[in-house]
Each structure stands twice: as C-alpha cells, then as structure tokens.
Image (cartoon, rainbow, N blue to C red; front, side, top):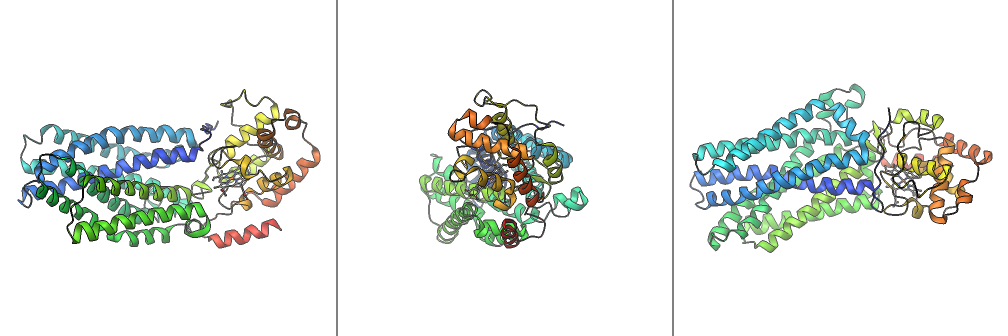
Length: 477
Ligand code: HEC
C-alpha cells in the first residue's frame, strides 16, 4: 500500500506545526470541559441562594464558552485532523484503525454536548432553574466524557502497555498513563475555567466591585484541586517508559526545559490561586487574570511538548516509529529500499534536478522530515555542518546509536548515499559531485555500518535511558 508522504513546511518542521495546532486545540477543549463544570457550580450557587449574582454570571460566561468551544474549538479540532494527516498519515491511520469505536463514541458525546449547549443557549431564560441545571449537567458530562475517551487514545500513544502483546482494546485504552492523565487533565480543565471566569467577571460592567469580588472568590474554588497536581505529575512520570522519563528529567536539554516551564508556570498559577485568591480572598483585575491565563497556556504548551517529544523515536510507542515506519518493516526496507511505496512527486521537485538528489530528497521526506528540516529548524545540513561525508554516512547508518531517540535507518545503502549527497548538495549546490555514479567501495562500507547498527531501536520495553546510553557506547566501538 502506498504511504501518504509527510508535508514539509520548511523552515518549520512538521512536528512543530502539529504541536502548535494541537496545543491551541487542547487548550480550548480543556477550557470547554472545565467551563461546563464551572457553570454547573455557579448555577447551583444561584439556585441555593449562596450568590445573588451567580445567575447573571452564568448568562455572561456561557456566551464566552459557546464562542470559544463551539467556534474556535471546532475550527481547531478540524485543524488537528487536517494537520495530522499531512504530518503523519500512518499515525493518525493507526489511531483510527485501533480505536474505531472509541472515536465513534466520542463523536456521540460531542453531539450530545452541542445539543445540550445549544438548548441551554436558546432556552435558559424561559425554563426552570432545575431544567437549566440538568442541561448544564448534561453539557458538562458530555464534554468530560469526550476528554475521557480521547485521553485513552492519546495516552495509549505514549504507553500502549499490555496492548503491545494482546492488542486488546481495553488494555490499550486503560493503559498505564490513562488514569494519571485523565485526572491531571480534569484539574487543568477546572483551572482554565476558573481563570477564564476571573477574566469574564472583569468584563461585566453590570456588576459592582463587591459582586465581582464575590464571584472571583467562588471561581477560585475551581483552582483548589491544583494542589493535587504534583502527585498526579509524579504518578504520570512514574508510569512513563523508563527511557522517556530519563530524557525529560535531564537526558535531553530541550525536553527537560519544557518540563520545567510546565512545572514552573503551574506552580506560579497554583501558588497565586491558593494563597491569593482562596486564602486571602484577594480581588484580581482583568489584566492579571489574563496574565495567569497566558501562563496556563505556557504550562499547557510545555506539558504537551513533553508528552509529544517523549514518544520519540515512536509515534505509537514500540509499535510505529515517528516517521510512520513499523519496526518489523526495517529489515525488509534495508533490502528493498524505502521508496517502493512512495509514488508521490516532491513538493519542490523542480529544485532538485538529478536522479540521485531526487532520490535523496525522497528518502529524507520518508525517514527524516517529521523531525527535521534540511536547513531550517533542527536542520540536518546544520547538524552535520562540520562532518565530512564518511562521518555522515556512518552516523546516519547508525542513526539509533547516534541518538537513541531516533529510529534505525530503514533503507538500502544506495538510499543512504543518495540522502548524504542530497544534504551536501543543499549546501554546495554542486550537481556534478551530487550526481556522480555511486562508488562500489562506498556502498560496501555503508552496508557494513548498517549491518553493525542492526535493525532494532535502542528504545525497547523496560529499558532505562542509562541502559540505552550504555549500549550506545558499545555500538560505537
Ligand atoms: C523521531 C524524530 C527523528 C527522526 C525520525 C530523525 N531524527 Fe535526527 N534527530 C532528532 C532529534 C530530536 C535530534 C537532536 C537534535 C539536537 O541535538 O539539537 C536529532 C539529531 C540528528 C543529527 C545530529 C546528531 C548529533 O550527534 O549531533 C543528525 C545528523 C540527524 N539527526 C540526522 C537524521 C537523519 C538523516 C534522519 C533520517 C534518516 C533523522 N535524523 C531522523 C530526531 C529525529
């Protein structure tokens, strides 16, 4: 079967484009979930006479929720699908293939959410308080269920757990990081809803200062569960594959940095919320509330980066590499070459003229382009700038030893030589050198390096990052 190619967005790498769309969507979607719960709480505060302003607030807040979750949430939701099929059609295909009925069920809850939301929007001023609460309850439940269901699929990508052996739907869905991440995301959802409430209260001109303060203090109740975040975060890290955990807790500087951003921003919000808003019952103005919300966006972005990044070299751990190649295909692709099921033309096909550079560009697209550009972000030309051709040949042939978070090279010696020529051509623009016939001695050497490297990933079930590094050194001897 043909494999749909990676779309290249140079100078951005596809992974970053995917992450940007996904983070924006996750942020909105989690707000939509928390917003439903927050509205139930305020509706109840109003009905039980605890707050005389709650009804007014529910009315004002709901408009924001509808606007953000129904309009922006839906647009970015479709955006995720659109981007995902361009970045990694095999990954999204694998997710649909394995979780068909979960997606279908999620869709039903999404529909229920829209129906409940719309009925509330349309009729809430005409129906009884109890009916309003029921509609909001239905809205909140449906929204949370869609989080619950999607969470099973997303967490399966990082920790497929027993599914790897049994391929049982239940084992894949209720995988090792399922529970910590469903609780964690629920708390994030409540936090976002509470922070948006602080912003919305400040925009409501019909409220006096006292009313605003009261509503903000009630909204701060939704931030209290943040106190559980450190425990859930630790649980999540504990349930992660040991090698990924090693990378995010110091092994790779970028991942560690993102983790620190997420933790630092969360601590800042949590500290302010607990001490300032909950204990001291401070008032918070629109600007400060917006700033906290931006911090929360930073924390979400950091967290999602860590989750996406720590799956490397897999997009579905132990089952499919980030470049859409299955581990048990590698040996075959070493023999046949990696382009047998790629009939697609290059996007910038006119740029590379010769046969070898064209082949090299296609090898790059198939195996490297999800995580690299040639000369933009994480550009291979820059990363190899100081290497001579033999160093490049060896380090690419031993790709999984060069960096354990890269998959093994999955192509023939000719594929690899074409790739090296293409990268060098990118810098030198020398067609004659790039298109010279392959040298037999070079191909033999590359083949030896490929054989030395083997076809297995460094990242295997149960291995720690230290073990991965030790093997790395052995591999170079
Ligand atoms: C799963 C994602 C992923 C894939 C697929 C991938 N790489 Fe990488 N690669 C990375 C990351 C992340 C780095 C680290 C970059 C850094 O150190 O800043 C890296 C580093 C490198 C380096 C520098 C290594 C060093 O020791 O400094 C080279 C060269 C490289 N990759 C080439 C390739 C080539 C060629 C391919 C395709 C055959 C490829 N990579 C496929 C993620 C990937």
